Image 1 (cartoon, rainbow, N blue to C red):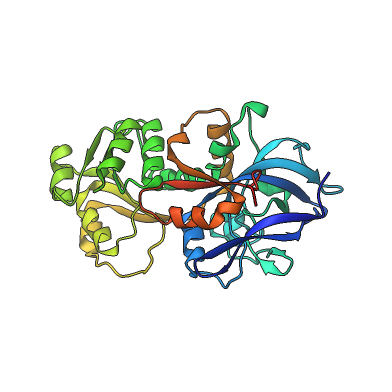
Image 2 (cartoon, helix red, strand yellow):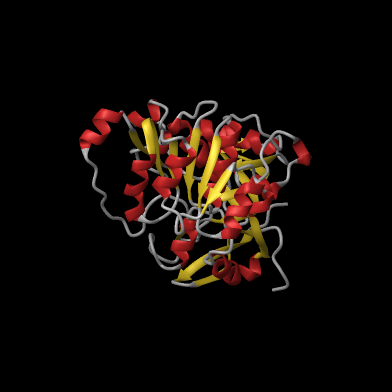
Length: 354
């Protein structure tokens, strides 16, 4: 029985999250209603919580997993009520040039806006989410699927896009700048591609975590010159690939010098605040280095992530730092802001004691 009212976490003003009773959405034709079970707090939600990026109030949440609760009439889909699923909340129009070319993550078309009793939001922190059927991905493995780890489908699919941009080949040296959650996921997937991974991270606990997850080398770039260190580790050739996952603009230029000829630099994630770096075009011309970015997931990447997680081909459980029921959303967001956490999970199936 689907209730007429549901609970949702709303960021009402900067640094304040609360649970509200809102009308439960109902799926229209072409839509699926998902009962959201788990949702992770991403850096984007952290910025929203701090009053940045979007007008408030807002219902955030986009790293989610759940169960199919209802299917809209005449909706073409293979999923069934009760199926465990993940949801790609990032909307794409399907009709612009980028969507036609398979770069739906770079969609320039008109996006569908969702609201909850007039409050705009992505909706992952609401107990029910109605969304187009092609945004809902069934998890292989049936009831054996762990919905907590399945909630990593969105960040994992973002990293899969980044890995694709780099075109890692077997035996290559890959430098990953930053040992936060995204750096850790890059390490895991780069190892799957047969690379030797080198982690540059100042925090000793994060370096240790990377080594535990398969990294070959981890060093402190605040103690050792990162370019000299990478050159030494690669016999003077430099890294074939560098994934830059931290939010520090000045260092974004330094690591270009650590790239080998024909090396690939991937700037992963956004910079807040943004800034400028200087590039000598001749350094690129004579070395054939590639500089690119990686933004959001593609449909293909989301499918790949759902299978990697559903079949337990990657282990992301170590990156759930803390878990909270909905009623403790304020504390959950405050803890997510702490640098000693990877991902904080909110359990929407657990409303707490009220």
